[in-house]
Length: 157
Image (tube, rainbow, N blue to C red; front, side, top):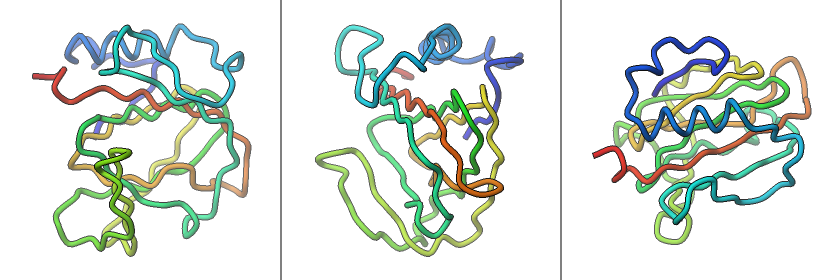
């Protein structure tokens, strides 16, 4: 997992080009003009974004998840939230497996979960080994705009 901000990300210079391009797209795009939905910033289906205008949830109502085919850049365009994280070590109970149709597995009862406070401009890059619980409340419910930038892991090879 990588946690940083597009507002002052000095380490991004060391990222693979596909991640640099994705972060530049996130930094230069006004997502307030986007409706909820799926968009393709790059030709083809190996990269896409999901824009979500949503309300944060209580931790117990937010589903922990992981992905296999796509890495997940979770970018907070507007608002504030908390996100839970923990390494996938095989000890977590699967609640729902939708890898085949949606590239996601949902989990229950995470052990050793840590939380990150996200502010506008912050992002986390989650790899297939990272379980994450997005969209959690921070100081009560709030309206947020999140952009999920998905990149096929094969593009990192």
